[in-house]
Length: 549
Image 1: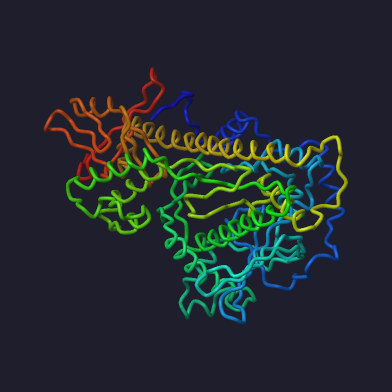
Image 2: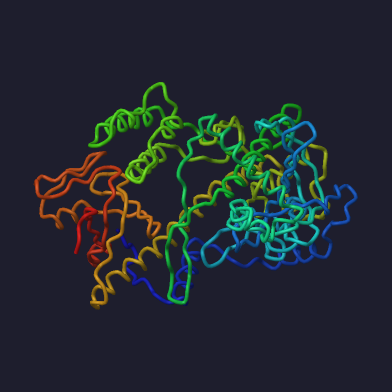
């Protein structure tokens, strides 16, 4: 594993915090806002527009937000009900950021410079000042808030019958977490009687979220959306420093995700429909092109070769009459085959192209959607504010009453291009920040391994990992214990086993019969052998599962 900075991984909270601050500084990310923005934010807080007579008065409806427990910028609140003709009525309330942040304002100008809210395990660098992003615009519980509400009627099978959008005044009845909602949905009858959500006005909505969520997940499968096994790296800063672990997503996150995706797909359809009669509409879409034909051909051949690996067979071959989604869902998912399945999914993912924001609608390959737009994160993405504004204007609604500095104002066409450019750029910046933070955390873990071994406190830990792929002189691993992807150099295992290795797309094979073969999808053990100061990288070793010290 490479260490480009050749710095020791600090083990204190203070040094971990400083490291993350340094990473943000490296990307010129600021956590504070310029004085003109703060003054405008103060003016918004003093004149919040909550008495707007055009707002639907929905404060008594049992909307709730569902997010991570530490989230403070609450963009979305939901309410799901059955309706009289059967099926569902979904009201998905989105923070009305476009009302408070019009183009030409200092707030919009700064938001356009940043593009998004940048997140790290320590802190967020908010796109909007905290008094707005965690205060006035955030759909906090127990307070009145402006919202742009997608009001969607669905059939019992999840097919959308009608979608309308309106501005409303809502009052969230709870700031719920994914884990807490999942606990409620999983509770048995004896536990339910004591559960804090059981007798609330929003309890029926949570039940319907589960019911409709499962239906929408199935509809996605019917569209040939690949159900990838997703998990997240969880990085925590403690008094001992920084820790890295894997966090599995609970089912409730997938339900909420399906509602959000539905809203964004419906919003894109509305933009396309309105643009037919409105040349002034400057819509923004997120498109995801299908993999290039050459990559798909290479993937098909790789999977055909993979099916001939020891212990597999024709079930692992991607047949020409199968969609990739059907292929993946047909594969066995057992303790013995889990590594093989995850390795196949990784190979599919690396064959994909990246999604991007564009001015023209285009198919979103990963979602199997004809079009997709970003409405659901208006406080955290400049593209959300702009998209809200454009939809409202196309509906004949004034997005914002606040006075702006005309010197800051650009025409909508030029502004759209600027929004698209920064939206695509900031997504890449967030990925680079994530990578830098994860590297720092991993560096800390591996140096701790070496430090403990050097002081004879414990043997070098061997962690379970999965071989995810091969490239030139490297073997790629996924280690769930520390939620990290690792790279083992060919030269390191050659030194370890005193033999040469030949790498292909499917295996690393030794010239000696006494050394192990490492195959795609294998469950292995990995340990930290040393730190190579001259190459500024960690030396990793591979071990078979039955290997003992």
